[in-house]
Length: 366
Image (cartoon, rainbow, N blue to C red; front, side, top):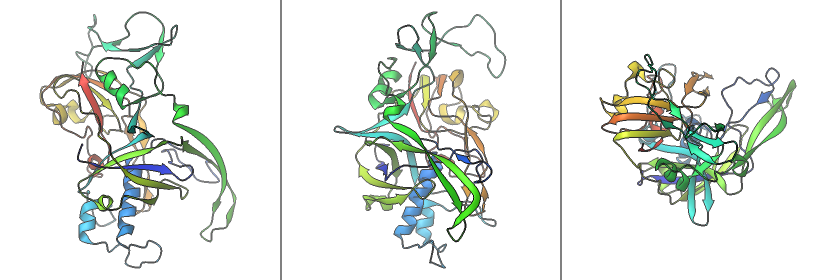
């Protein structure tokens, strides 16, 4: 990851990253935004910018789909009604919410699900796997319950961790002052009217859009490898998200923290969404592709499934809706002998999933 080319993207105003709930102006009149957006959104924005850098004009070029082969090889091509998708050669890491500070760029990671806040003291603590005096059946056979340090009243912790807090957390130190969401971004509501193809207002098509406004020093951080157009284009403006919103990107220097462990008893925290056939479980409950044949999952703290879809421009229809493991989910493994990334399955109809940012993790021993 230290050889990645890193981009920091900030909005010109606000951003709109639609969630997976249906929305049609005049029917469902509230469009809600996610933050951070799913990796598909950032990959699509960067891919479009790269193609336009080669002179593709989406509005006026009758040969706009005749892209040089080396560019298609690098960025891939979506499936059409007659051709299967071509996965890209490049890989993305992220997107991550990030903050620009005088000392440089730091990622901001959603609070891991095994961090709890003690209600009577506002202190933060970690749930830990403990031996159980009961027997569980498949798929939970041999699992260990995650327990707080004592019987005091606890609740799920909220907020975000920067890189230094994340590293301390992976070493077993709970956060003392996580960053509040309101200091990173806020949602705003805007109103609008759907337009016709002639760009005039459509009657009875009023809608509300819930957009996201990141703080002044906050943006999205994404790493790209190997060489791409962004090695020579070090800054620029690109369309990103819905409603014609724009962002400005610059090349930045960033070195993500190293994985603190890769074998033995491994604690894995998802940093971007991950896909598994069984929701949080892979096909046949085998974790061997990522952690070796002997690896066993013994505990899990996961958030509510994150539905991710989108619109397939090539086919003119919605993409399949998939329920993803959300960022901040924590997996506890034993007997890990190897570590292979990304931490996600790749469905047959979406071969690029593992290359465009899904399945990023942080890991440490427990």
